[in-house]
Image (tube, rainbow, N blue to C red):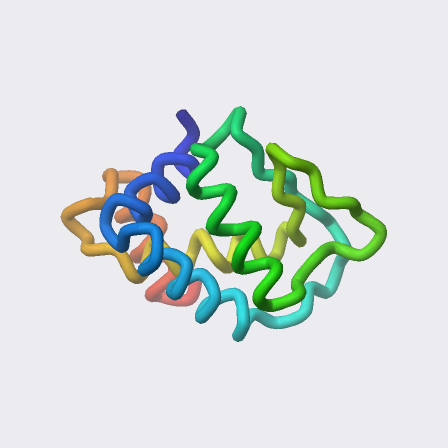
Length: 114
């Protein structure tokens, strides 16, 4: 499982479904518009269906669909910038002791603005 998938599963375990949805809506709602239209696909190959459902609900609430992309059942398409911002936000919101060594390193970089 990738570090990103582990991060999302840790966040789901820590916040619960409703709490994770609230955190994602809060972070995604304040995300800046991407400067480039590079997209990322999150799928059940990489993470649980429950996490994907939370992302789909947040995308619906915020109307943050990638233009010219049709929704697909087992995938969420979002701008790569938003995916990165969401991951960074989760890293800073999760307790440090829950993070792997690599994610703790990422957290330090985020906090230092690197």
